[in-house]
Amino acid sequence: MRNPTIVSHCQHPFSTSRSTIKLGIVLIILVTTAIAGSAQTYNIVHTFPATDAPYANVVQGLDGNLYGTTQSGGTHGKGTVYKLTSNGNLTTIYSFCSLTSCADGAGPVAALTLGTDGNFYGTTLGGGSGTVHCGEGCGTVFKLTPKGTLSTLYDFCSAAPCEDGAQPTTALVQGSDGNFYGTTASTPQNGGTSLEGAVYKITPTGTFTTLFAFCSQKDCTDGGSPATALIQGSNGQFYGVTSQGAAYGLGGIFEITSTGTLTLLYSFDGPQNSNFYSQLL
Image (cartoon, helix red, strand yellow):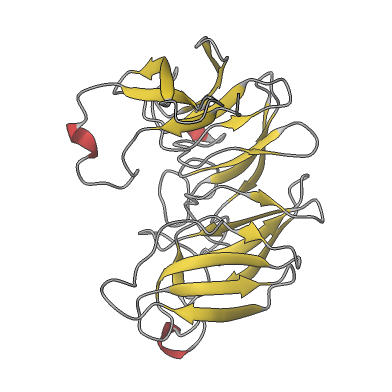
């Protein structure tokens, strides 16, 4: 039997129809049999209540269990990290906003990343101590052990004008150098020198570096608002997609080195070739 494919059915976290969800969100394990021509089967292993919104894929830990995030729900209604066994036994291992003023973060919308050390790394959309522009915190980068011990590695927008970025919505990727790389997009309080998002690097111990601030070139020809997670190519460079800017203002595909040198590879140029939000593979 082939490896199971994990499918999470949900709406985009910024969909205007999010409040219209009436039914729970279902986590499905899809199993394809090895017999040629046989139909695919699936099992519903857990159904989330509509108040607990998982918008991100799950990842498998070293223990074989699945781990994921919900933007809302939990003890304080500000999101959770959960563990799910293959038979559908779900355990909340961390509830965000457990600290005063949500100093530990709030509203995770991106998937977790399993580090080579066996811990999980992720981002929150809000919370943290950076409140210069966002009022209730501009988000965090965190580390979480499989048993649920959370450490905040970085607070976005710790100083005006949020040149480090703010409100991250995408997952981290661990590079071959052991560091983590991520993006912040053009949200209402987006960060970056030109406030059009940024690419950043952070070590497993929390040393943070802004590698590139988008829209630093005239007319944003370098792109703006990176809306997806990065991937690392076999050449060691990182690749991503912007939803705005570039040659035609419709976004593009870029390459960036681990030291922050960015090259725009392609500019989207028409109604059927623009504003991409899908991650490269």
